[in-house]
Length: 421
Image: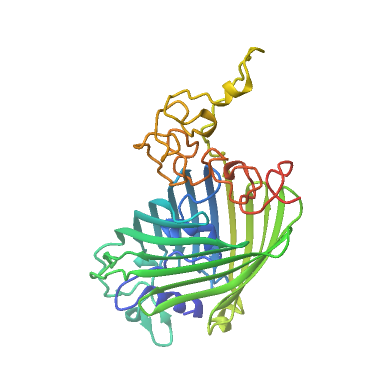
């Protein structure tokens, strides 16, 4: 039996049940909402779609291949999304199809800190082809494996469908110009049955992520990242960095280097043009499997596109009225439309009678995002802003609201759509 067939067979058969590795990518940020559903719909634009494909262990025949398709939608503080995955490997034609829907909610903590929570639920269907596999009972000394011999294995079914679920938290903050994001998620806490022959519980999995984004100057940025996931005794530890350089207003290029401890070095290159990102990475195997793979690990390709600007209610245009020449300026300045004792110039609700303590607004006025602008006057009811910006956020203070700013966390100019020149 060829060595790669033996390796795949060992992977397929452990204690008389078959299994396939969980979704595994060298660039987990491209499917961040799968690993942590709290990352669903956090993009600056309305929609985001992504494609990713990974070919693993290309040096040992029918290695793992994983494909992913995702779509996400942002609606104010909420995020909605879904992912579809296909995995296949081995001489036993192990295949796995899964789909899930995800939801997230963002709660502002301070002007520069956010807490996100998310959950996801879906299904997975695993299948194998026992006829294509060989077993110890079919081995003939001096001849090899004879597929015509009875393998004496009893498979109750060659398909298994199970329900999957996940939940996660993400904390994001900014100090000076540095962005920090950390998160954690739990997958399949209910441990569904995935056995083909006997009842076998799928172990729950824990995932932890961290990113530190440090601007070097107006054109260069470095992002340090860490990724850790553990499922029973198995774990994956991925640490490294990405360097990004802005070429012009539309184009940014990046190079990355990561190490999957005791497994592989991962080199990546990516390019971002307008709202489209393309990334290509290669794994160089450093584990004990290297002798078989000749160092070949995996090739991975990812594509991500964002589109659709967030719609924010615009303030009503104020049409100036013609003032008769015989009206004195003092009479205009003391106008009190709602007769609540505060002149219009100082009244945040000039058309609603209120109290001085509430800046002229009704005491019962609701301020959902606690930014000092009541909901009836707030153009971004659930996003914390200021009175000067109509209640909408302008994180970098460059005069462009975040939804219109292509670089919402870097102070820029209107001519460069909010990005540094």
